[in-house]
Amino acid sequence: MTTARTATPSTARAINDRLALDLLLGQGPLTAPELRRLTGLSRPTVADLLERLQRSGLVEVVGESGEVRRGPNARLYALVADRAHLGGIDVRATGVGLVVADLTGRTLATAEIRAEEGADSGDLAARTIRTLRKSAREAGAERLHTVAVGAPGLVDPATGELNHPEKLPRWHIDLLAALRAEPDTELILENEVNLAGIAEHRIGAARDRDTFVLLWLGHGVGAAVVLDGRLRRGASGGTGEIGFLPVPGTEILPSATGCEGGFHSLVCSDAIWALARRHGLAVPGIAATPQSEAQAEAVTRAETVVRAALDGGPAAAAFLDELAERIAVGAAALCVVLDPGCVVLGGEVGRAGGEQLADLVERRLAGLLPLRTEVRAGTAGGGAVLAGAVLTAGDAVRRDLFGEP
Image 1: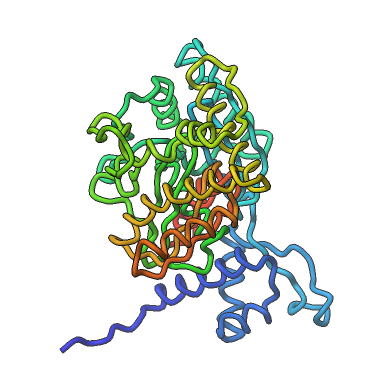
Image 2: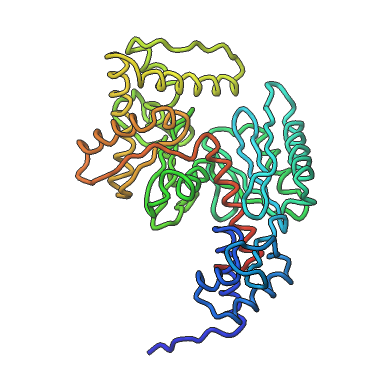
């Protein structure tokens, strides 16, 4: 027989404080009567928690509401947005994108640092750190409480180390080492597609779903898996490495050191370009020679041809049909194992294809599977990785300042 535990006064206060802070975060400034109505707490309890949160520097009075009589009940309370600052970083082959935000997640500064071909690896890491510090200072932050970084590869859940079947650029490793050396700043390292999945779940196409899969279609391919509201990473951080999935239609099998011959070879940007040429579609040429620039150009080229095909003729329609069939092959493998009920198409190609490509993939899946699966176009946008990084860093900051939910 188990006995129910009664919350101690300190535990009850912590729960009530967190409830009020979450409401102020989600809804903005509120009056004491509004907090009482939303929380169901008594007048004395709300008065006590507001006084306590003001003393802690988390909440402040920001004005008065015109909807109630003047006096204590009219005061508007809000989070102190500059109580802590945070950062989000998107590490790509072509460089780094970064965001500095306040406690509420509001963007205060953004920057881009390009990875120039032949540049010293340590120099790029140093430039990124200098830019991050400068952006933080311009945003009024003496330091960043937490920085979340999205990078390609597998992040080991046990060690937090970044691994990749193929060799990582040296500057990726140098940058992560430099970020870990930043004083008084917590570093969170996460797979880039996982961060995009968090963004689609919280602010994008899957806001109404607790279970879904984000299928990322860009230069390469990957997936983020959210089950019962939780991002799933797997034993080694490899959940969603669908590029290695052996599929029909390729000439070789993938290996432990490369995904060529797997699902990657059907839907990567180069494969989409080749498919478009086979269907007789005009495809922009590639002028860039350095590898990082060539990758960016290949993605742009694939995105452009998919977007152009949406309003094309019979050849364009045939191209989109075959592309949807290829995407459905990988999506079907995810669905028969996980049965997510919803697949979101993200990345540059997924965004370019929009609802039209999503509808085509959904129809192909309906013919392949007995499982009812909705396919949606991602709506978190081109900054999905950075948005997910800011959300992840914000969660960590609030856990530290507000306490565990």
